[in-house]
Amino acid sequence: MGKVLQIGAGGVGTVVAHKMAALPEVFTEITLASRTQSKCDAVAKQIGGNRIKTAQVDADDVQQLIRLIEQEKPDLVVNVALPYQDLPIMDACLATKTSYMDTANYEPKEEAKFEYSWQWAYKKRFEDAGITAILGCGFDPGVTSIFTAYAAKHHFDEIQYLDIVDCNAGDHHHPFATNFNPEINIREVTQKGKYWENGAWVWTEPHEIHKALTYPGGIGPKESYLIYHEELESLVKNYPSIKRARFWMTFGQEYLTHLRVIQNIGMARIDPIIYNGVEIIPIQFLKAVLPNPGELGENYQGWTSIGCRIRGIKDGKERTYYIYNNCSHEAAYKETGTQAVSYTTGVPAALGAEMFMRGLWRKPGVWNVEDFDPDPFLARLGEQGLPWVEKFDIDLEL
Ligand code: NDP
Image (cartoon, rainbow, N blue to C red; front, top):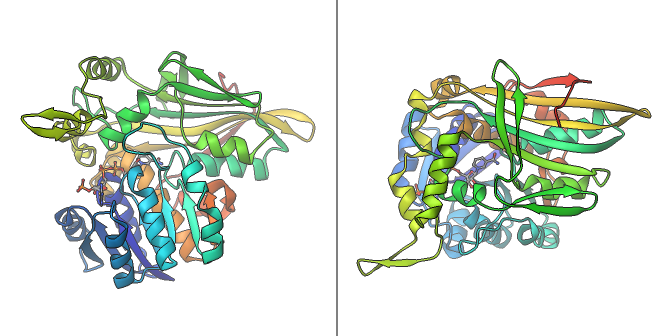
């Protein structure tokens, strides 16, 4: 098995470290590095057993990353810092011939735009270097893409309609908080919507299309909003039979009202302003005063429910299919001290790293998770804390 270098010690990073530390036969050594080393030390202490070594690194700086990788000599770098760091970390992996994995696609700091083109452009160089890059191995992207690959492999000859549905029916008892990094989250949900239909992208105004969808496990109907989400880009490319692909996320009225106010008063701005002679970026300042997503877990109640609703053809007949996971905020907190959004992202990231270490997901180049065999991953996902459910021939509501 092998040695891993994890970069990022936030909410998601805490879960990844917990899960990897629990598998010493797979992850023989773990180094946890981040911008603020004290946060890595706190995670290492919480896990205990001297399982985790810590380090400091500014992952925007390729030379610092190269030095750290050369010093630690990991088999795999797991990037759970922010999307801005994807390219510098990939550059350092190339320079040191080390494999790479992340949970979110690259996004330039100065423009709220996320797409795979920047990372896909590394494919040939990763191939030539003989190293693997696994892109987007959280829950969405990540498990949603693996659910789709599993459906295509086992249940459909042709997937025609794909709706990814993401519900957070939990209550954190704060008037406003985001469930992962506030800067990245607000940039994502305030963008225009976009979905795939008949071979082209269709744009919508932010939150223009919405409807109540019924979520399983007693959650019931929740207003769900069509937003753009990055896995749609690779899934429509990898499954060209898809006629329409959309992504839906639930938002409460209180969340949307706060979001509107934040935008209206300029606090979602990503361009620098001068405040008291110092340059600040309003959304980064906002992040500093909002609750830390990694610390929301204590009073969080309720469930998340994320899955894929698929319609297509099997043996000449139309079939509908729903595959999903429901995750309890309370159970996630009990196990790792974080809430379910960090948990549902961190568990698949640790499992993707395990797939790499076991040699099951390893091929030179740059790959999205649906490019790998979904079976060994899904065989382990429930055991690792995220059981999944399949339903056939039901009303998908979509
Ligand atoms: P947090 O903000 O809680 O944590 C980010 C971590 O990255 C912090 O430890 C932070 O350090 C570190 N970091 C930031 N910049 C740098 C840098 N320049 N150098 C080194 N370390 C740095 O975020 P989350 O844990 O909520 O999210 C982590 C990632 O997971 C994000 O990319 C997010 O988009 C992704 N995600 C993916 C999901 C999926 O399902 N695929 C769902 C949710 C999140 P510091 O403490 O010093 O700020």
